[in-house]
Image (cartoon, rainbow, N blue to C red):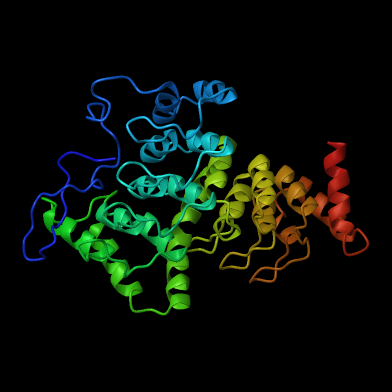
Length: 367
């Protein structure tokens, strides 16, 4: 997975020179010398271009799913390009998430270069080896730091990546980020390449004990994933939300909260997207999770007058009697929506601990 023209420090810290390091480019250009003299194998071409329809057909009776073309598996190319749909299909078909190419790269190394953490999270969730090493002993964290990928650095550190790992030249991930910041003509961070922020994050995390480092990374990473999932949930984009949830399957990710304490479920409920609410709860979103004002998702659905979302939340276990910081229940917040108020009042009057839930289930079945 070599990228022409990439740079890295050589073995002498005092001297900076151009050396072979396949980590500076996030995407394979059309003129990539690996494929210059012939076309890709069909499976690889479908993976590289995210041709999901073609990939599904090929996987019905494929050559071996881990077959190589120029040393690369189809999964390597999907990971390098950031195509999570193609990667998921290959993994479902049995592709080896820890296969290595001729340079010792695993799909996780390829994913760690990217600006989006979707692919990185996906292969990690499918069992990628966090400590995998390339031929030059670079870890996925080295790749992320070298490319200034702050989100990737946060996730890798959260899951236990060794911040002090050294490659064959004795360089740590922070060393790689420092070199790239010095080497970059702009001498500053860009929206997708944040070497300064990566350096600051790694320097702060390095002296921490393991538990403290994990908690530090979780707080920072949680804000990132909360924004990603929250935006899709607020739009009601069920297709995109399903794709993201396949990439971020950890319960901590599904329930990650933003600066206001709101998670994706709050965003879906507030916007009234019942399908998104249902999808999130299926993926272990916590219906009892509260914002900084102690609002539950049901409070927000009621306040905005979203009957379908309110019914669904109560049917999935939301507490109609829960009060927020101001002592208000969801019913109290539904004053401007007679339909929602009538439903919540009737649900709250149902007998027994599960009475409101059973009432809501019946109401859903009747619609």
